Image 1: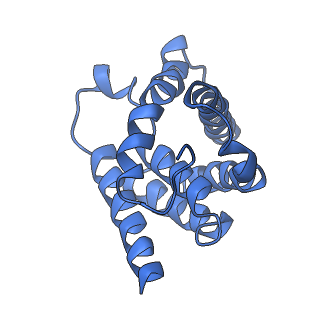
Image 2: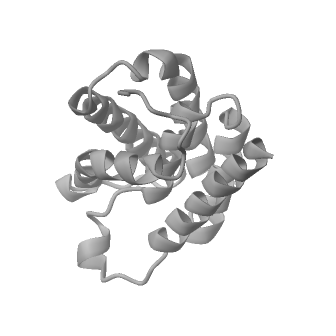
Length: 161
């Protein structure tokens, strides 16, 4: 019974992140917002790797592509690779202090942004400005807050206590 509840909570948090991702926001601000869906998914990949793996990441990415109007598979590829890396390192991740976790999240978000840019350029070549690369940094700054907020929904994961 507890496993079902945990799975439901994680799915609900991903759905909430999807709703936040597609909220109507002016383009000037939306450019700088992080990928809330990926940040939420990373939390679940790290805290419950036995339940949420690469398949879950791929499915979440496909839904993200459909919601945001991107070419089908861009986010699925990106999320799957990030999930794989999270699953390979989840045991070590628990021992890192929050600032070091934030740096790792920055690397994962930059990798995701790079993969999405690469897949978009393979379809239609275009240049992006420096503002395209700011959202991973803002996402990394938001990580400690997201981590602590989601930790309230998953009481079994307590890395520091």
